[in-house]
Image (tube, one colour):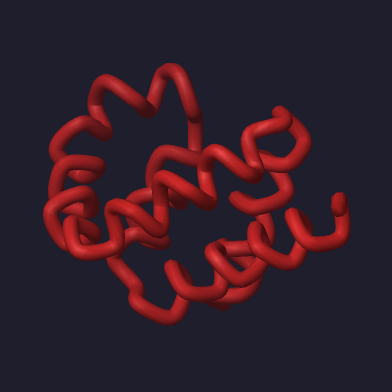
Length: 83
């Protein structure tokens, strides 16, 4: 399940041309991941109208270590393929 969530998010970020910036930000903010997960949960009433079901997907990915690592790996692999 974690690979599915991560791949969906990675594909959406790549589709919007945000793969490399997202990879940099996610790597830089790795120590803050638990706090970001709580913040995403807190902001769900605001983000749900904007992101739909993806708002929960983002929060669950931030909450799971394996999903977070899989998201980073998916973005890094796509970034290497683009070079």
